[in-house]
Image 1 (cartoon, rainbow, N blue to C red):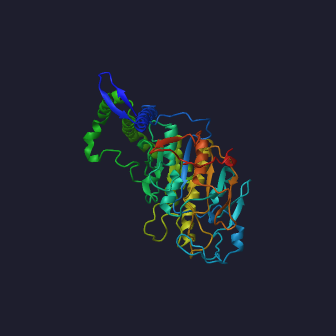
Image 2: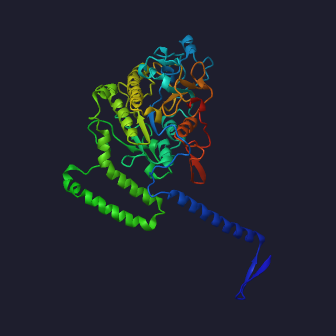
Image 3: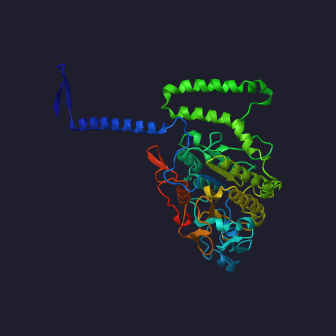
Length: 488
């Protein structure tokens, strides 16, 4: 211990080594913290427009993503995953030990596909007769037959498929993409969500939230049902016409006030984001009605998407809108084919076919098949398929054993497919076991799917990260590998 002398002649009490090191370390820690805060502030304020287009990390194969999501659990065994062994064992006990417990049932007998499988295309991929339209596109599609989830609960599995985490509150893939690349359109949101006309999916808006990213990166919902405004509260009520008459002058005045307010605070990213969001909302009053107005589409396109069909038409409209959105520079479009489980009446409102799989999948199959196959055809006709990555996901699969006339949840194996945007068509990756119960060859999680999609967009998934709450966060967490076998 020593005594410190001060210029004024006063003396300070002795300082121990422990106190000296503590104060020294605390001081350096403060310096480090200030540097980190400054770096983060600089990164956050790298542009006055948080949605301004930014260059990819390397040459991309795709410019946009259309992500079709089938909530409820689409059965891989009745669509894309052909299992001859399951046919051989039809009617025999699946569990011979009595030890297996599915999500909501004890296993019944082995149940092969309710629809026959056939080989299609030059690649000879197997697809069931439930999806004849998509079967005609297998040479453009790549299948992942070894997908798995960490949970068999709809909500958490939905969150994992969309954000990489089973807990809510993490940024969705679309938010990460727009955070990394910005927007290619000045008049439309970068990330658009087209929900099923029956309602929102399990988990609701959390599935397209921005989490800890700036709020402007969350998905913007556009209603697709005819007769509804595309975006809620976008226009003033009709009985307030006086507000509309002076709207142009009001916008100009507000823009001037916002610019003056922002000038001395140009390092405040939240303020810049809020102003950009308000300005985008104003432009949406013109762009949203234009993009959702399908009257200018030729009759051949309306027929392709079967817009006049009472069941297939609404999803066909979602798919057609997705094409129109990416055509106008929207970066990420998510389409939901199915809604939240409400009261089960005649048919489930999504793919969750516990009671009667032939009834439910028999209804939803033609809807998905009609819209998705038309989308692939239409994108190709417009020269957009090569630069648009189309993905079709579900949160988990279904079991190879019967649950009465249905199938229970299966987080151990399911299939997703991709097409366009740099994908090597006619290919497949991984495999489930002979009965389709668990992923056996190259088990794959959403991390690998997300890493591959980001790679095709010109983004290294390990470098797209944000420091949040003491951890460097990214879409793929600490996992993920690019599935190079599926990349052209």
